[in-house]
Length: 495
Ligand SMILES: Cc1cc2nc3c(=O)[nH]c(=O)nc-3n(C[C@H](O)[C@H](O)[C@H](O)COP(=O)(O)OP(=O)(O)OC[C@H]3O[C@@H](n4cnc5c(N)ncnc54)[C@H](O)[C@@H]3O)c2cc1C
Image (cartoon, rainbow, N blue to C red; front, side, top):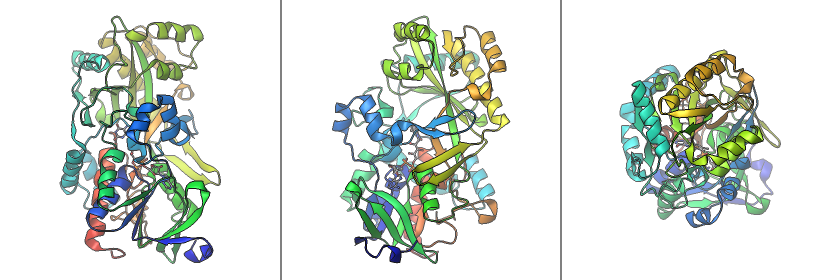
C-alpha cells in the first residue's frame, strides 16, 4: 500500500519514526536522538506516570497498562494466556525488571544458524555494558522480606543445585511487590523512566495513543505509516526511515497487514511458558513482603527451565486459583501467611503461529511431545526443590488436581497429567520476524531490514534469531543498540 492511496488523509513529515516504545523502540529512539536525528515515537498505549500508577489499584493498572488486561489467547493444547504491555515504555513498565546478558554460547549458535555475523558476545559487550550502566543493573539483595526466595535458595542448596541472585534493573527498590502492575515508586528502570526521558531531553517526540495501522511502501521502498491518533483521526506520517518495535506479536501482525513478508512474518513465534505452583510451608513466609524475587534456580537452564518465586497478593492468589474447589481456596487464603507462589519458566521447542485478522490477532501454538515431557519434568523438579525447601503441600497448576504432599505423590501426578490439563501463561515471545539469511527462514537481514525492503528496520523482540531461554529484555536491548549503530554508521537507505 503506497502513500498515493491516502492522498486525502492529513500528512505530516518526519525524519525517523519509531513504532512502539518498549525495550527495542526506546533504545533506537534514544540512540538516534543522541546522534542528532529527529525522532518521533508512535505509541499505541497511554502515557501513565509513576504518580498515577501509585494512586491506582493493581487491578486498575492491569487494565490500563496491558493489552487486553494481559489475556491474549494462544490457542492449542492447552490454550494459554499471553501478556504484553500497551503503554509508553511498553512491556518494560509491567515486567519483573530482570536483566540477564545473553550467554555467549547462545549468541555463537544463533550466528552459526542464522548466517548473520556481528551479534556475538564480543560485538554486544559494549551495548550490554551501556544498558547495565544506564539502568543500574545489579544483583538484588534479599532485604527484609523475600523469604520465598530464601527458601527456594535453601532448597536448591540442599539438593546441590545452582541458583543465582536475580540481576535487576532497579535503583533503590522499596520492595512494594507490585512489579508486574507497574512500579509505584519509580525504582524499576522501565523505559518510561530511563531511555525515553533521555530521548525526549535529546529532542525526540513521543505521541501516545497513536496506533500504526499500516506501513506504506512502493516497490520495496518504505515511505511512512498510516496511523490512528487519539480520537481515531487517521494521519499519514511520512518518514525517511521507519523502525518497527511494536513487540513480538504486533510487529509481525503489522507486517502482515502491510503486505510485508506476509507469509513468513509471524509464522514462527518462539515462546517461554510459565507454570505456577503454590506451596504451603510450616512457618510464615509472608510472600507479599519483598520484591518480585531475589533468587532463581539455574540448575536446568541448559534444558530451558528456570525456577523462581512470583509476586503474590491475596488478590493474585485468588485469581490464580479461581478454578479450584471453593473449600480449597478458602483454606489456602486462611493460611495466606504460610504460602509462597513459584513460577517455572519453560522454553518451548514448538513454535506458535500468528495471523492478523481484521479485529486483532489469531494465535496458535504448536507444542511438541518433547515440550509436554519437558513440562512434566520441569514440574517434577520444581516439586523436588520446594519439598527440599520445607514445603508441606503443593498446589500444582492443574485445576482438577489434588494438592500434593510428598515427592512420590508429585512423581505420580507427573505420570498421569495430560497436556490439556496444564494451566499456562506466557509473557516472553520472540523471533517472530527473525534475523537470518532468507534461505534459512530469516525475515530480516543483519541490519534488521526485512529482506527486499528499504527504509524499514525491525528492532524489537521479533528480530531475535531464536529463543533466549532467559528473560529476553537484555538481549532485545543489545540487538536494538546494534541495529541503531549499524543504521547510524551506514546512513539511511544505504546497505
Ligand atoms: C509480566 C511480565 C513480566 C516480564 N518480566 C521480564 C523480566 O523480568 N525480564 C525480561 O527480560 N523480560 C521480561 N518480560 C518480557 C519483556 O518485557 C519483553 O520481552 C520486552 O519488553 C519486549 O520488548 P519489545 O520492544 O519487543 O516490545 P514491548 O516492550 O512489548 O513494546 C512494544 C510496544 O509497542 C506498542 N505497539 C504495539 N502495536 C503498536 C502499533 N500498531 N502502533 C503503535 N504502537 C504499538 C505497544 O503498545 C508497546 O508499548 C516480562 C513480560 C511480562 C508481560
